Length: 141
Image (cartoon, rainbow, N blue to C red; front, side, top):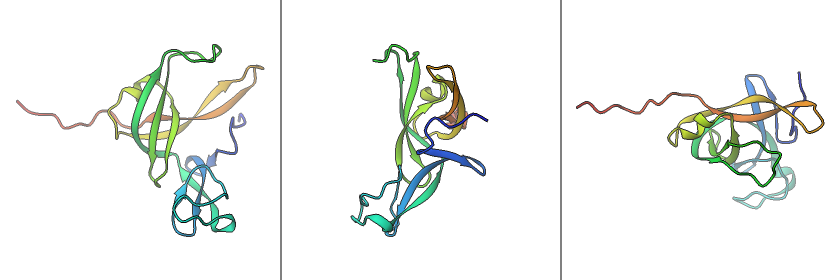
C-alpha cells in the first residue's frame, strides 16, 4: 500500500480514513491537532488530547478551479468546505467535479486517491466525494 501524502493530518482508520484532530477537556473538537490553546476556553497543553475524526460530513460550499497559480497543477479540480459530523469545518479537495456541483448540505465522505509526486512516486491523499445522489423532494404538478 502506498504511503500517505500528509500523515500528520490523516490516517488509516478501521472503517476508512480518519482526520487527526483533537478535543479539549471542555468538549470542543478541532482540526488539525494542536496544543497551543482551545479556541473556546483557552486551555492548552495536556487539556488538548488527540481525537480521530471520521472523514464524513456535509458539503457546505464548493468551487471548481479552472486556473491555478502552480502551472504543474492540472485543472480543473474542485475544492469544498465540509462540516464534519463531529463539528469542525474544514477545506478539502473533492474527488471529482460532480461532487462540486451537488447542492450544499449533501453528505460527503473521505476516500483515498492515489496521486503521483514530481519524482514519480505515488502516495495516497485524502479527498472527499459525494455519498448520495440528489434526493431533493420532487414537486408534483
